[in-house]
Image 1 (tube, helix red, strand yellow):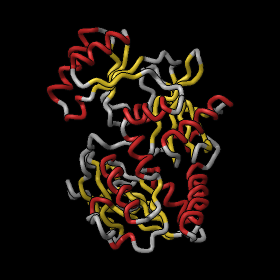
Image 2 (cartoon, chains in turn red, orange; image 1 turned 180 degrees about the vertical axis):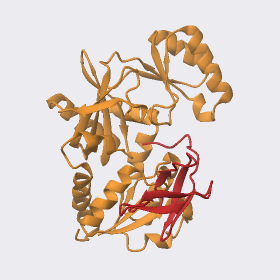
Image 3 (cartoon, one colour; image 1 turned 90 degrees about the vertical axis):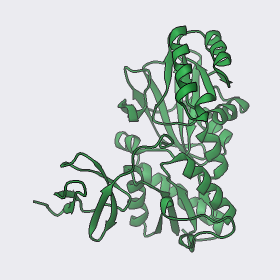
Image 4 (tube, chains in turn cyan, red; image 1 turned 180 degrees about the horizontal axis):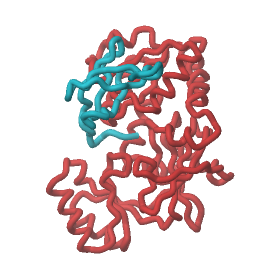
Length: 61
Length: 288
């Protein structure tokens, strides 16, 4: 059950409802507790998730 | 002020900055660089009204190009493209530090496996082979024998992108089991931490433990000079301690600070935004 600090969204890989922080940002990455995948927040109203891109060699600081 | 944030992934670091900017009632324009086209004459519409752009691209290649476009469009960007270019490439980074007489590990660059092997043998074992572009300690090799050197060089030559055929060979610095990360703005430290690990790589991204570090006068001087050497800005300056003093092994231009923020009392994103606010009126005439 989601509390005030979380909301639910659908894991696009499994179709399950998962909890995400209520203050998620577009572009943020969520680790799905169901599929284990990294999911990217692509919209916040409502929260929609897509499978995140794979790590690229030139990523970093 | 209206702050444009260049990004393709919002990390904890970006979220801290976004929260700080919102708390101060700044406008934010989130610019996902994957979704726009950057024309050589005209900026994408999303840049309209932006007073300053903060480059937080996770991808180095995107960072290098988009900051260059910002400069061409006449939009102030931090860090600027010249700083980004120097910091993103370990060869340019090392050259900038050495040219400014900032102590930095001795480094050779070679373009063939034969020439690289000669450098490795001259440095002796162990020595270090690093990719010229890369981060988070990935693809770094501590080479302990000639046979290992031959194998790694062959792999890089056979399997790698052409950048992996630019062999960056560095002396191994016998540091204590830690290095120092200083986050600084135009050479003035915001905060610093020591990153410790039993592993020779002490990146926070590799799971190093972190603790507060108070830079002494020598470290402060080197941070300022290293920052100047790469063109200044919001930077992560990495130092190692040796028996002869500190050595600066690299300067990072899209610095991550979440690990630092968790370990120090200083509010790092607040200090970053303080600096950003001070930069913008000077450059654009906009009141922060």
